[in-house]
Image (cartoon, rainbow, N blue to C red; front, side, top):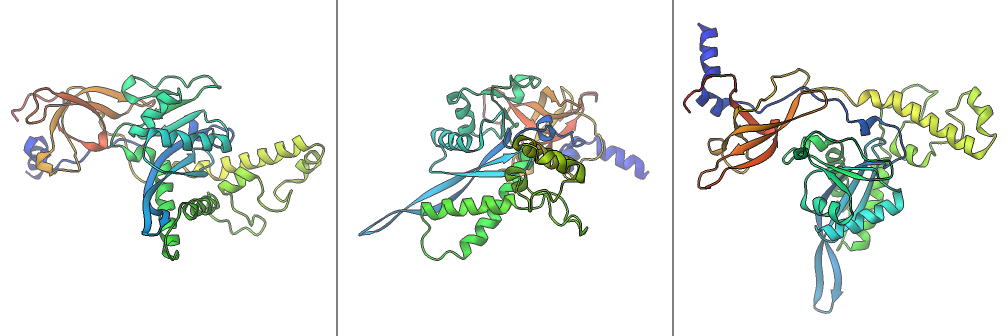
Length: 356
């Protein structure tokens, strides 16, 4: 009897509306740009955070306040960060920040971000080829001397966790630093704070701290950027020392190879710890009737739609879909790209038609 009741509840559309959970799927493999060796900041995740009120200028009548934001660039391989301060959330201001970033860190082959309007506008002005999930299967990356920009689907911040997590770290550091600041904050003070934040975050350990006395230092992004961990040659074995001092280029090559091997062994293996989304689920299919989760309204008011298109990942599982909605009061239906974490399945396509 208990099993029969569960089956009836599971098949009930009304119960799914009231109790149904958002879709999940097994965690996908890391993208190729996360595990491919290359110079720092070759593949970058970018996002904007803020704002903060600062003093723009002082006059006889008082002070003039304005706002500042920050653009955080995250290297997808070394996990190092770079921060640029901007004056407004516009395409022009973001392009200036990106040009400063490239002038310091070198050319970027791949950008990843959410679908912010300032990012979308920047791809046109900077002549960067953009890849949207709506464009079909992700194309092969462009030639080595070109740059492309991959946008995540809307309302899927978890797909950019590699840089969203670091933004959370930076915000906590800023909040703790601003507590000790007395008086007004100027643009110069803010930019100095951002430089200190970069140093602090890039000095964080990438792997658990070892208790081995023969391995006292910890791998961090600063070591990968500057290649200055401690005394020269401390980590090199006796075989490598012979070739290290024959020429300057051999020395650089030896240090780079040492850091790459250690990063690959100690860090890469810790990236894919699947604490959730560890089992495969049924993939959504075209024709499934779903609820679309909207944070600004009550569950009973979530719009109902039907899946019209799928965007499978490289492993074949579906994590993004196109949903066709017909909202109340609108004459025409509209389609939106949403991650499966923002939709609740009501009726599977294989099911027989059930009156809603």
